[in-house]
Length: 144
Image (tube, one colour):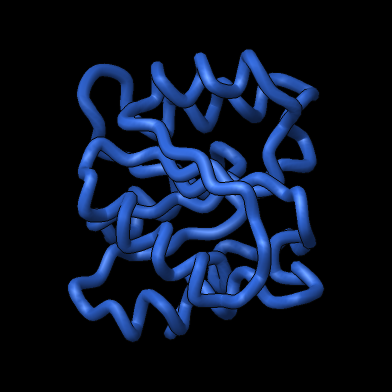
């Protein structure tokens, strides 16, 4: 796993920090990058190879995460990049939109760090099988 890049895109610094810490606690080695919003994410992506995984918030200033997800999925460069929608919004319409736009998984934001850590561990297992899979809509949300 060394050398794989994970990009965390969220306008909330605390949420970026929590995901970063959870990824580090998996014990697996990743290059971690952060972007404060979608525009920053796209600038970073223009200057690098496609990352292994992107954690992408929905509610950000300007263009929302689902619009950026559509942009990513329209570019062949990112066809193998896992995109995990990481959002406090969790109702069927949001889950449907994320799924239809090509998100790999949906991870609901939680105030409980241990629940987040459990979910991140499940997502970033040593084989990365969860990120290689295409799930049906009813199995798309990461449960903890």
